[in-house]
Length: 119
Image (cartoon, rainbow, N blue to C red):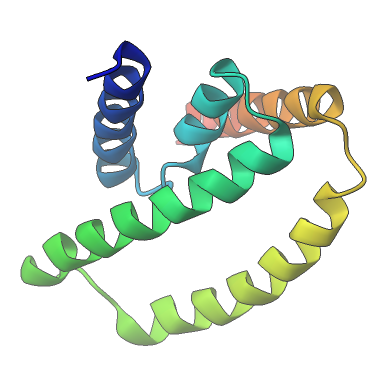
């Protein structure tokens, strides 16, 4: 097996662990990894969504078995997320990969600080 394929599969395992542990969907890990592998921001995000769908379905099944799923809330969040995803995809078309890296880094820093300071 090609070493880059091994690296991608291992990255997927790491993302799956991170997504299942944090509930953040995996994109916060997968997108930077794909950028590291040389993908454009648009390709990294689009590709990550396919991986996230598979990871999310697996994590949803595991959480369902443990009784940790609020279906009404999840569906409502999903409806809002579908609308936001359509808007975000169109906005992304106007952002270069370099700009995206900076925006993504700022979002991660703000999220980290917020989580760190929250009691």
